[in-house]
Length: 432
Image 1 (tube, one colour):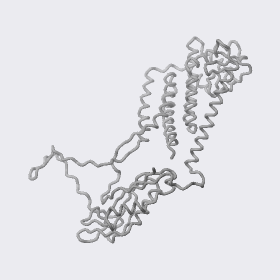
Image 2 (tube, helix red, strand yellow):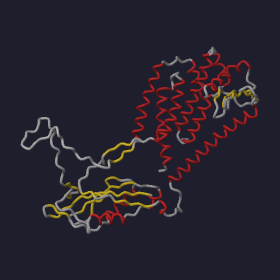
Image 3 (tube, rainbow, N blue to C red):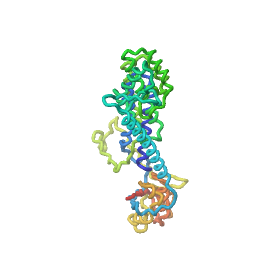
Image 4 (cartoon, rainbow, N blue to C red):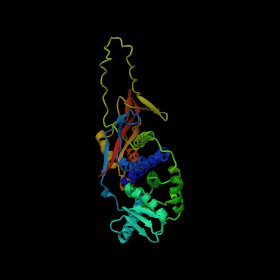
């Protein structure tokens, strides 16, 4: 999969997690400054954390006893892939759709910014940041450091509405909107980034309302102005607006709500386990490249003839010498191991020379290590070929095919009798 698509998906998951934390724990509090900071930091964090992968080390997660051959490396260059004349690969199609969305949303943001800048250029008056416009299709809004007021607005309501918009300017809300709209371009397919955008705009309105009420404006009077104007609007998507009808009910509720205490900030601590959970879910596990040799236990060392201490751990059970699969007894190690014609070096050379890198895997950039298990029967034939650790069906199937094609071995023997023996071989497919 395209790395940027993987990044976008991870960022979307983080965004969703932060949104649910906000809605579930913080959105009903009146700590508007904290809520604003939380939303902005959530977006920033959602864009950064996908770049960080926790790598954990673990041993290979399957037990195996048998003869392990050396690693076979199958390497080809991407340039060797045949020219494609067929339809686009699904991943390529998906990436093109993603880029198309980025261009559309990015173009929309640029057009809105250009329209706003053009209005300022044509109507600004030196010495003031207030622009009065005739026929404005909204009551008032703010952006790019200016307040835009409908010239037809009644004089008794103008002062309070301008005070509301000035609160937006003083708190630099416009830059919040530009930032989250830009993030929305990268994650346009993710509904949660747009929900966070909406939540941020609501917090902006709560903050501006709170600023007006703190200056002495009676709540009933302020609510009356809001009700008078709220349904006469058609605002810029990148601006703050006094008369945005989407938040009317919530604004009315938040104006009369009892202020949240400082202890409400402790809810933020619950964000840490959420981040940890998502990061662990995206963690990458790598196999240990080497095994550790057990060191002798010098403290509980027992000399032959001595009595073992009472707290000494029991000795480990001996490895099972054979297993029964489909009614066949297959040994892990035999007195005389099977012999490939020419030896193990020739066996590995045969696998390397007869393994073909699948075209579909080359085209899609698929690579990795496939660990294959097989049985050399008491007649010397190869059977029971299976995948212990797969990468992709294309590579797995090719590994099974080449192992199944191996010529007959000289059978192994146990106690002088021919027996079946397990083998394992890792085949690593690498693109240069």
